[in-house]
Image 1 (cartoon, rainbow, N blue to C red):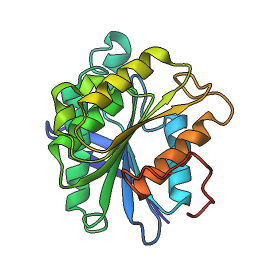
Image 2 (image 1 turned 90 degrees about the vertical axis):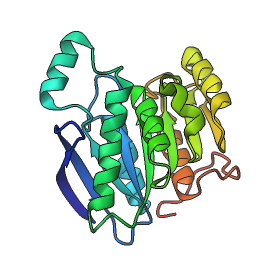
Image 3 (image 1 turned 90 degrees about the horizontal axis):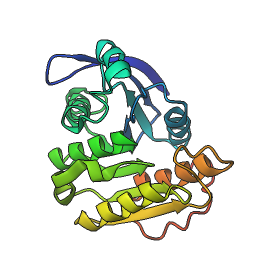
Length: 227
């Protein structure tokens, strides 16, 4: 497996840091879009990314904000809900992958958490040829707004069963999608999926979706490592 720290130029000239992992003969590369107040070092996203890597998928975890923007956001929270900005940063990562010799031929999946889910959906709508699937974990897809009907990649919305408001928002967003989609409810899980087995459920569902986007045959059962 190739592990590399990368720097991705954003459309506005900012430099975004990322961690790229490329297993041998990778079929799909998953770009992670983190949520409010988080970064590429999110322990939950890194746990999901590690499991996807074990299953033979590539991953790219990126900081959607620069260090200066992160510091300002911690004080003002002005960037974490700026979906136009965050979406443009995900688009920059997709375009960068298309320009790199090692990744330009790979299908791209997007994994978004919290507000990062809206950014991922906005990017999927803007790059329909490159993005083959989208997964949201405890996300706010509703914040993608008018981008939802423009998404052409299958979408999996994973929500905790004990996260009722976010579940409602996800169900309403799913009704606006015009592509294959499913709301996957993790029983007993709250917003951060901290309960025993909850994050493992997220990982299994995401792995299945990225390998077989839009496949309704997935039944939530564990996949063997390496599948």
